[in-house]
Amino acid sequence: MSRKRLRASARFLPKFVTSFRDRHGVERFRFRRQGYSSGYFKAPIGSEAFREEYAAFNCQLSIKEAAARARDERTLPGSVADLRRRYYAVPDTIGPTTTTQQKIMSVLDRGFFNGREDRPVKRIGFDHVDAIIAERKKRFKNPETGRWEGGVESARKLRKGTRSPIRLC
Image (cartoon, rainbow, N blue to C red; front, top):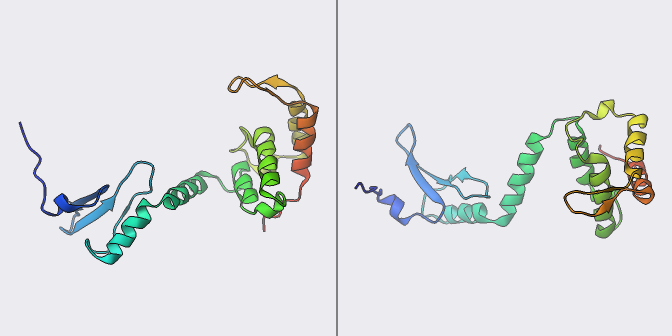
């Protein structure tokens, strides 16, 4: 049976913080927690700056920022996913209230953006948009939810959502 030998500094580390020696022999501290953004501490352990960094790593807001940063890194410039991200970044262009914005985003996500994220925006023409709207006119039962989707009203809402002005600059 072998026992792990703990370093003196490792016994008193906060939760989710690990220590190691880098290639120069300097002891470094890293925050790692599943679902959170990981990173290295810049401040010395035990200082007030270290506590502030630890609180920032543990903050739920940092999770959302890390997820948004990762999503932005994955999108190709000029793709439909990039258009979607930039269009949703300015909620005032979508609608006046949050309820209206959520409804329009839902219609666009289900009808227009769904499955087309990697395609370049340059190649989308009016005939493509008309084909997408015509496809949305057909009613179908969603296998995931078991609910009926599509129809004339759904196509009308999608056309209205695609006509709204897109101000990306």
